[in-house]
Length: 452
Ligand code: EPU
Image (cartoon, rainbow, N blue to C red):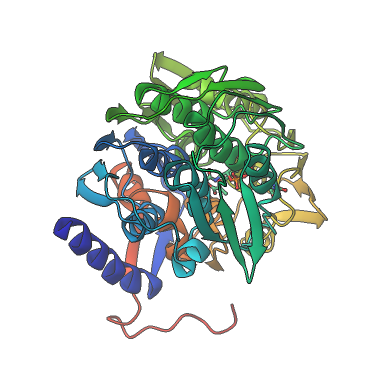
């Protein structure tokens, strides 16, 4: 426990430093070498929540060291779990889970911590989790989570910004049910799948999200003793069990980090190899990279190599739930499209406000017009460095990618977003030969230009 508190204090200090840091990037260098892909953030977060379902200590491997993971750790601690971190391995002891209420300050920072409502309710018979609210990319309601829990027999009341859920009756057990999701929400599928593992009877989730992270979560729960069939397809069937046991589980590689590095190779016309990856998880991204002219070779079952291509050309992309093109790759891919010859279109269909990188890319010389959630990208021969600000995680990744290809020195502000989802991105890029440097504005007595 002390180890955990120390690590959290350390992260707070790092965060303060990060908020006052910028990244300077000198573009146009070729990259070369191998990149080690971290464990998937979006698998790790629900996996941590899922350990609350167990009455024994659970061990998770390949958990990336990220700000979001630390916030989730704090949520679990606040609920009564004990956490020990050793590098990328987490030991979570949920035996003393006794507080059903997640703190607002933490849920506000990390909306994925709302997904813990399913496990808390299933274990304690009661859960109080604040509504997470919207964020930079959209309103992000949780109505599908709430309706699904109600279908499983929970009483749910929302008052004063708090979702109060409880199971009435003496048995304190959720009841299996047939749930149709109006939209294949990743988070709602995960919340309901976790809750249903300890329910009485059978639950069927129809129009479920098919993302690899949902399947990974199901595999984790199965390894803990749950009965789950069909995860990774549109219909998931869960047959409830009385309790779940301990587990030693390694989560999947991060397909979005992998895709970001494939684009880093493509946009700098470089030769880099990424591993470990599950190539199947990247099918839509690889297909679009190939259609713009990037050469990608599967070197081994878990590694991909991106190579110097010909002149890159335009393509059209719509984001879709998996197996479609991922919304999390929309901004990074747009950085690449901005230097592909011809006119490309990019349509965001998953979130309503995920085009905020466009104005910053245009400040770097890109030629992109946006109407609603539709962008027309007219390729330019070269981007030029500029001071830029990242507004969310993937928008920040897009700007870093653009900076790697741009002529001159880019100053990037927004490391607090980047550190939520990319483990040591600056160090990994430096190892490939990219020229970049983190600068502490306070130490250097710098101020960021006021015009941005
Ligand atoms: N939605 C509703 N009602 C709900 C739930 C979702 O209307 O109850 C809507 C959302 O507002 C959105 C759409 O459904 O417009 C899709 O949302 P979804 O629930 O699928 O997303 P999520 O579970 O909140 C996860 C990832 C996101 C990723 C999306 C889509 C985690 C922790 N987050 O979010 O990751 O973009 O799925 O694939 O798993 C990121 O990593 O940068 C990130 C935002």
